[in-house]
Length: 139
Image (cartoon, rainbow, N blue to C red; front, top):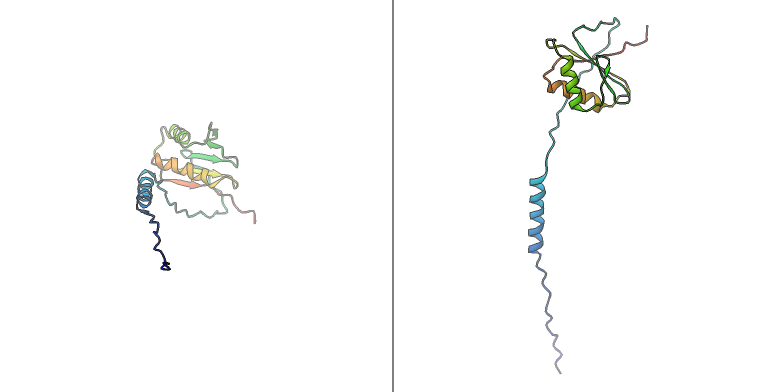
């Protein structure tokens, strides 16, 4: 009788092809991914003074309501897409020499709609962008 333990054949699992496939997928996703460039916007909000200042006649007034509708010089735009805003701003700029853009946003307007208007103005080369403020009722 042979009581010696028999030698068992161990199963080898070769994971080299699996690692190759994982690295190929990783390289594929790294190459095919598109990155969006984000801009950081530093905003110093103006403080309101007690006296009201009149809007300059050569200023472009942009209004934003709480529903996301955009108004340029009190004319409603058909949508709030950036191309529509740029087209309306460029139409309002005809005959004006570097006018300031005054953004009057509703308190409940989304930040994205304000940033969209600012981005459209920046793409048109406008650098004088101000925000209309409401005076306090502490008097």
